[in-house]
Image (cartoon, rainbow, N blue to C red; front, top):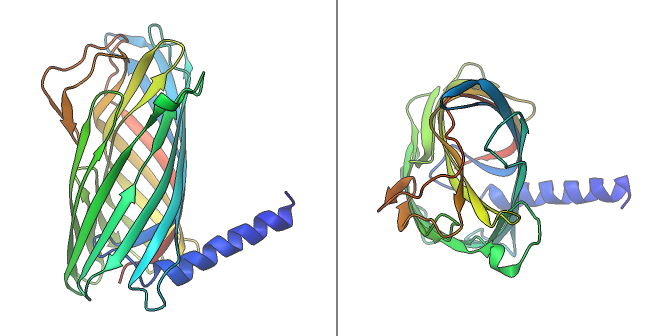
Length: 307
């Protein structure tokens, strides 16, 4: 495909974002992120073996666009794609994971019920694997329903419930969302317990603040007939600048209060989890535990401010 064709596709997607996301902006976060690219580096050490250090490099890309939107922006079909690659390098005895990948198409529907209330339903099939000998059974399924309610121009709430198949067992999703403008410069927004931001507008183009970023997912390791669980709870400080009206570049330095990056036997699972909380007897890891530590992240995103 020619560079002209690529440029045409990008321009078309950005056009869809501008005309589609602005009137359909979520009322439970500070902005709608239509395109995201990020790179994260994790310096890693094994518990009880501090002389052995290695690293993880994580690359992510995502896009979501509204299609077949109503002329009055009261509803739209949402289509998107999330991609990620986790690469581990260095000397790591007992930790046989090299590269794992995540491919998650997104299909959803958003309906505005009133000037204050909005409902969104998303279907989230996923292929999380080392991509060796991929089979249909490696695809997991999930979905969420989100309800957003805007109290006034400064405050809104959101409730998200859902279910996802995970290789470590069934995962139930329960998120409480908040978007609160605390003044001309301060804003708090996110979906607890997985994301949360407290942002201060230092200048019209520069924000600084605190953020929480949580993940709890897993990847099938085909060659070993096992799975790799990746759970994190990163608390950090960020600084970001707007390169243009919509493109923002954010740098984050964080500390992993929660970090589980371990290999398990295929049938050794949690009976169930609610977000991060495991219910019942925990599975037994087959790889060494990792210490908590720092993480550094750089992210570029295309944003449309929420109404």
